[in-house]
Amino acid sequence: MSDEPDPPQPEAPVTDEETAQAEELRARLDAREPLVDARAQVGPVVHDAEWLRALATAWSPRDLPREAHRALVDQALSRMSAPRPRQRAARAWVGALAALAATLCVTLWVQHRQAPRTVEARFLAVRRSTQPLFTAHFPAFGGETARIDRITMTRLSDLRDNEFARWRTR
Amino acid sequence: MLAYVSDSSDRDDALERERLLVARAQGGDRNAMGQLLSQYGPPLYRSVLLPRLGSEAAAQEALSEVYARVVARIHRFAWQGAGFWPWLRVVGLRVALDQLRARRRVVLWDTEEIAREIDASQAGASTDHYLSEHGERQAARARIEAALSRIHPRYAEAIRLRVLEDRPRDATAHALGVTPATLDVIVYRAVQALRKVFSKEAADV
Image (cartoon, rainbow over all chains, first blue to last red):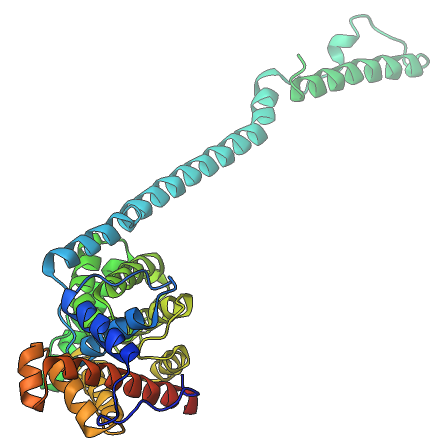
């Protein structure tokens, strides 16, 4: 706009075009119609009227009507998500449940670790003498290897049973 | 809530109450958010949005967008002891800037000017919205007066009486000593002259 020629001085003769546009501007100012869409292409006089109203608005801005403002506030508040205290409560519940689950896991793991000892106490073979393995008298010399083999086989059997008991395969 | 308080201790108390209110709003308290918007929305509309956007419809649309952004981004607001107003004002300026950029026509404020205002506001702004609003109004009037001083005095008088004071056509014509039809032409020419001044200012800045 700064490239446009300067407007004529007040005493300059009035053209017909000026008269027509001045009349249109007056009509638009008096009509006080709502402004057209700000993104729309409009004629120069409509733009002039809009510009003058903006000037008046900047000079003496009016208050927003209370009801209109209340509606805007209500609209904004309706977009707010659920109150954070509830979210915190939900997070607290989730945390508590997670802690409970972790406690249960630890308890089960400890019980699992302790479980073989319980089996050992109740089912494992106890220490005992080799005397019941030999009911008959044997000579002072000779037959030692056979006796040792018998003891070994018996103890191997006890060891195998103990392992099965620990593994809970019995 | 911040009110116009002269005593510094009262002002500190008001700031502390406002800080708590903001914290509640950040925690999802709708009542607190409603109090903040009700306190600061009207001055934002009156002193920031309406003068820059130039129409009540556009300013209301902008205020609605401001509220939506505040609700969505309140958790990003970090209290820095300056109150809620400076942050809200910058949000308002950004919304106004977005609206003006989407327009095909410039009203009074150029988009570059508003962008500079945003930068200046982030560097430091009045924490008191009463002082800020007063300053905004004074600045707008000074800007208009400066532009009026650069056009023909008769045009300036026509604009003052007919537009700024909103006097009736006949009364304005009588005050200027012309017929109503002649007044229409004077006003028409005055608008062309004044818009030229504003455009030149925007180009010079």
